[in-house]
Length: 77
Image 1 (cartoon, rainbow, N blue to C red):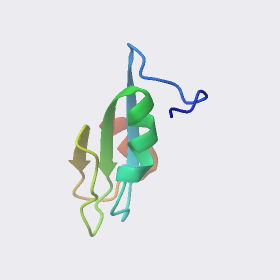
Image 2: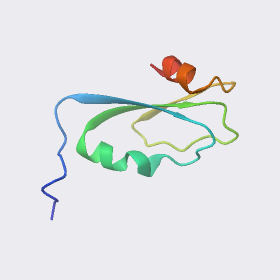
Image 3: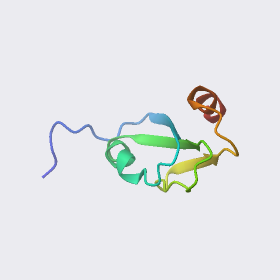
Image 4: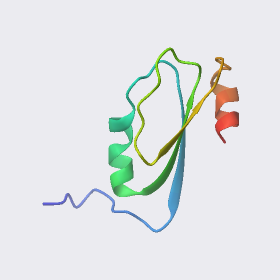
């Protein structure tokens, strides 16, 4: 039975941008958010040694060098 406190998908789309570095699995991080809202996920990988696994609704942008969190956020936006 659905939990009454969990929000249901709304009409508006939410853009989510996250920066990663050597974080191989991100799928479960966004599962609850994607279940409740219509999201567009952008993952900026800051030159990790491993390619992160992201949910199917996500876009992955791999940077050739680690440019730091702030600059990676700006690149992803």
